[in-house]
Amino acid sequence: MLPLSPERRSSRSGLLLIVDSDLHQSTDRRTAVDRNEVLLVGRLSAAVEEHSLPSGDTVTKWRIIVRRRQHRKGAALTDSIPCVTFDPETAAIVRGLKPRDYVEVTGAFRCRVFGPSAAKIWRYEVEVSSAKPFEAEIPEPEAPPGPDDHSEILRALIPRQVAYLAPAS
Image 1 (cartoon, rainbow, N blue to C red):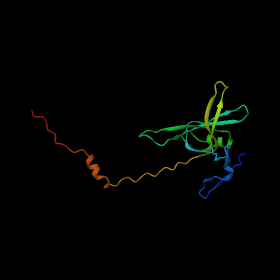
Image 2 (cartoon, helix red, strand yellow):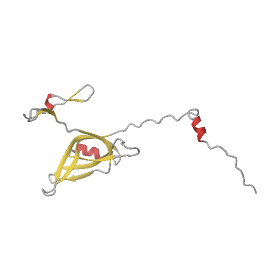
Image 3 (cartoon, rainbow, N blue to C red):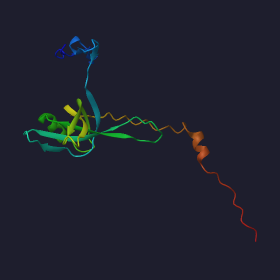
Image 4 (tube, rainbow, N blue to C red):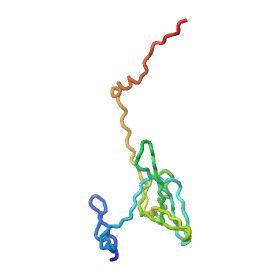
């Protein structure tokens, strides 16, 4: 059975709902849901690159730096995720950003194969369908502690004067 054309509906909360047209019957008569949707929020790592293809299309490439959750004390791990788009409107939005600017992109995960059959090169990237600058919410700084809040701790940290004994002559 061929998959039906996809139909998407949103719930009241804005989340996508799975509808009958998303369900595909496989050859072993099992029903499965196939999804290839990516949402990334991160920082642009460097300037955007554009390449003209022999077909006349233009591909726009960039990388997004996404922080991982800390799994060790003090370790700040990041992933640099390659992104591409063939859409001129999406490319214009990304070109308008500077390196280190936050961006939110949506798209699909792709595997591309390049080169001759004897030396294939496999590349994984996100093919971006939409992008927008991401305005990160900066938390407001906490109020500084009052004078009585930490007086006991501060008193313990202040060095005490010690009587100095001069050597006898």
